[in-house]
Length: 327
Image (cartoon, rainbow, N blue to C red; front, top):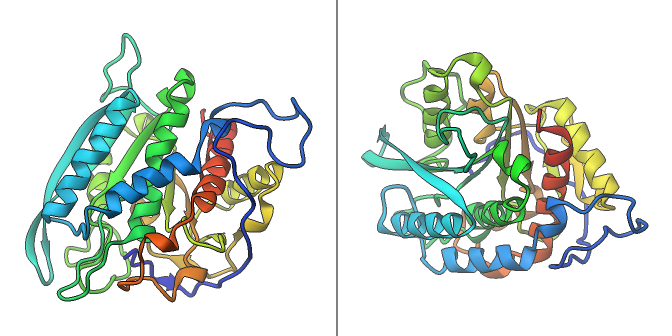
């Protein structure tokens, strides 16, 4: 899914700018105007190779053989990039499918002299990696789960050489974002019969056990960012401050026509919502509007995903995070 239930959501913008898979100065700037760092390392072509490999597994709904295969792939790629992995296993009782075992995948970079899993991080960079469950439709979720999963894997590679930046992050792959039947409006941790956002709700619930001053400050979610045209619209139920900073980042990279704030009242149900319940400042990079024709259909296939769109989103997200979210 993403069962992104827009409450209501407007569509917008247009085309894609050419990307590059080698570090380079952004279009329209002079050499040295912007310090080349993590964002220049990000390659849409490399991310696309991950998307292809994951989509080739086939449907990957929670509790399936396919999602376990995708877990193994994700863990392998993150370890190759130098990240330490940890599974957060849990079980949920769903409305239609009964009890399902799920697992969020957590990745952190090694900091010498500090315990990887008890030290504090500043930012969660997130994607869900499950696909929506259908009884008859073959749904491989190339854009809805595949594109953002590939983006997060490439983000791991792009940030690995920058020790201070990578140490400030936790990469988080949520299981169970998709609703089994249909999303229910999130009403907080007291809701015991919700449908959807299982992984992010579980993670946020566990995070409440951590002292408030040791919790991450920011939760940045990527979802459905591989389509063309790329029209990222930051939902109204995310941080206005972070939305403005992300749009400033897109301006700096000459990608501004691909990013805008959603209209007032255009909220979205997605994995950023439970993170906001524990006091995190959140932002959601999502380009659902132009993709609605294919969303949650068998047509969400690899030909609907474009490396340039992933690259524009990934570079903008990295530029925004590195310059604004390390403290």
